Image 1 (cartoon, one colour):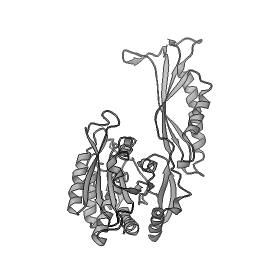
Image 2: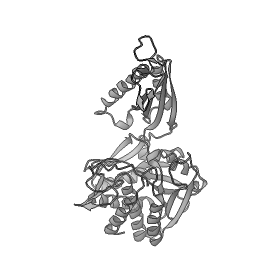
Image 3: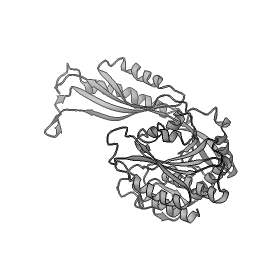
Image 4: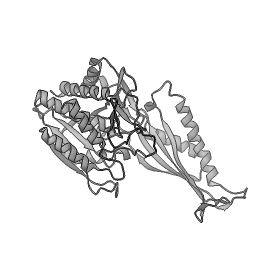
Amino acid sequence: MAIEKLITFFRAYLQVKTVHPNPDYQAVFALFEKQALRDGFECSYISLPSLHKQVHKQAERKVMVITQRGSDPTLPALGLNHHMDVVPAPDNGQWKHDPFAGILEDEMLYGRGTQDMKGVGVLHYGALQKLKQVHGIPKRTVHILLVPDEEIGGFSGVGQLVQTEEFKKLNIGYVLDEGLPSSDENILFIRLGERKPLQVSFRCMGTMAHGSRLDTHNPVHELVMFLEKIARFQDTQKNKLDNVQAGLLLSMNVTSLQAGIMHEGKIALNVIPEQASATADIRVPPHMKMHEAKKIINDWLAGHSTISYTIEAEVHDWECDVTNKSHESGLYQVLEAVIKNHGLEAKQFVSEGASDLRFYVQQGIEGFGFTPFTIQENLHGINESIRMYDIKLGYELFYEILKRFCV
């Protein structure tokens, strides 16, 4: 696919609104299927069972699989994963252009998803199309996977996909997922792993009383004293960032605090409530076990007998710290060689946030995250955009990766 046609396709993809709670996945399927069938690829769909009731308004969720069949079916296939959904782009007047218009101006393409991660998905497709055009049938089968719901945790997307019999029949042994723009003209990142999310809600029980009382158990005070321990710990972790990658540090962020008695639509300022609640988003680095993170919480709670907690979501321990194994991987060696061949440095990193990659790795599939952009990282940010330079660079990088690993 010529770069001009690739840009046109990219802009059309950006114009499809795939924001929750009603992402238009069907329009994405129509866009890609029309192009894929024209280019001679196989197209199939894997239906996903609903993990929660009404995850979003669409009644049926699917994964689209675009396949270039290889000549040697004994070779494990390569999966190129990208999530179709994007985070919201509030109309706050700060965007230079409509975030869902796909505006190209001064060698910059603006839009929600240019970096995370519609841009990567378009380059997956363009590189595979070029591979087919130049080399015909490769030895190794390649599957492009268009998946839903990563931005709401992935549990109802790839988390469900990998459990299906249809997925297992794809014989995927390797996966490339999203990485991170390097923000450095001389470097590209290879993501080796990521932190594990542990999301917790706390509840403190006390005694409802008049706000003037001295001798009472105030659950708001008790909970705030506990939350202060989390805040202080977070500060100690932030102080380590100059010397340690963020993805290798344990983080704890309080994400909500609720208390108060409502009266006629307002909080009654003279009433101590009987309970207070809070939530926290905890991210556990690969080298730490989940029970070790929980032990920290339990130790802090030892002095707060009226506070209890519930785990709302967690990812169980899995082998995502592959730093010592990466050089043994043929796929990693190809990634590193292709990056160096373009005069850039390949730098390993562990991601702060979670992605779809963890679900594949849990199934014993070898995987890495790779976003071939050197632009300043602006995932989820205002004026998310990508340079034409990065699009062209990423197109050539992915093509060369496919040629070396699959032909």
